[in-house]
Length: 310
Image (cartoon, rainbow, N blue to C red; front, top):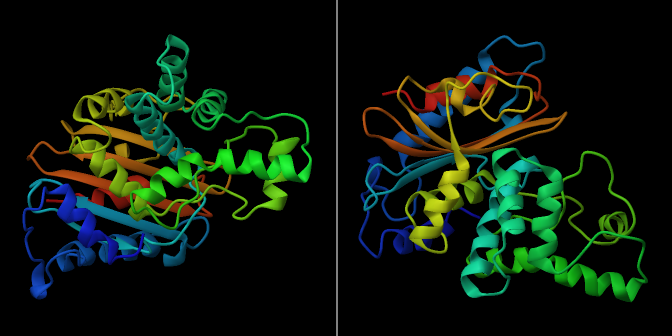
């Protein structure tokens, strides 16, 4: 999603209300200079902090959206339009798509679908995500297909992409299952035959989606409440091996902050997409993607701390 796309989205999100001009006379969908300066300082500080391996600005992408005043939303980013492998952050897009399909009657609500949606977000279960994506697209994993059958399968698998493209999202790809082991069969065939070969998100796109959930604009207000219930995190929860707070945005939050988030991590990436409400009333969508420093549990908390300072 290029920067110029923010203008139309912000006008829609604020219900057509004019939003505040940023410093330097920049108005409309332009990035806010004060927020951009804040991000630049956070990135510089992160890159200047001694680490086991040097951190370069090109290994970070950051988007910050100030939602404190819904009628005057501000935003800025660092490499916010760069497509990056999102790991489990893509599950947030599958969650919103599932609620859209349910609202439109395209899929039937069931205890099993709700169980899978919950496990996909709360526990970041890959197996649950496989089920949700199968339901959304009418596709399943399995043995290899003929080229023609594989093309038809891929067309169905792109249903989530088509939905978000219709809403103006760009620079993203949401059509792959996350794997612990695998993929095999037709999933491997599709990776070899079709580009892009991996899921891709930008921090701008992830921040936009989290902002829409925060403001009740993703599908319906009631469904946004249901999504937030799954995304809710305790920033001070006791660490566990697979939690989504230790080493993520939660670690940079002050006491009393509220957090909703979807993290993602692999051997090469550590990401977080968060909605934060601070004790002083400020409300932010914060998205940070990092590459090449997946084992550094101090990186995201440090960036979040700098971004959200008073």
